[in-house]
Image (cartoon, rainbow, N blue to C red; front, top):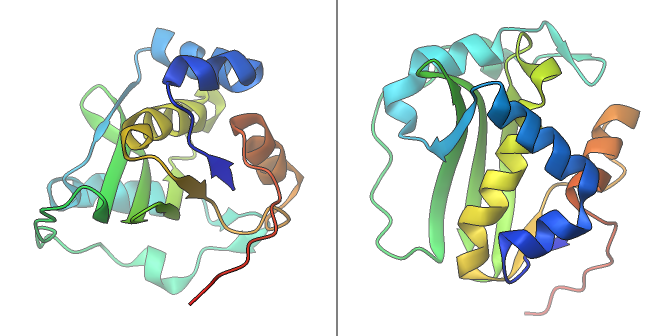
Length: 171
């Protein structure tokens, strides 16, 4: 879990590695922006199929199929709904994150980068942009279990600011 800070500068001050890597991606010409998923279906499919394996496992069949070109529904409340974000390079989507927001809970549902762009730290720019976009709503950003994934994913989660946290859900 990552408690969303009051400002992006607060996050940047406490996460030197993530800050430097996000800045590097920006210097290389990558840009963070909200995504209209239906307008980038081809890019999403290219990202999904850019590597045959992720975290040592083959990509599941759902990632092999082209995504929907149907527009997402309009979510009138910024505290409830899907917030799709991405990183672009030369007007092409090269990384995406789907954030499902429900009140104080901002859940990272899907996050993936194109295999050809991962070495350029696009995932750190994606994290910084998402944190910046979501902090105005407050609450907590959740990204699966801290111990899920391999060493590289756990390293990424820690550098971005996710920490293992015991959560008690109340009815």
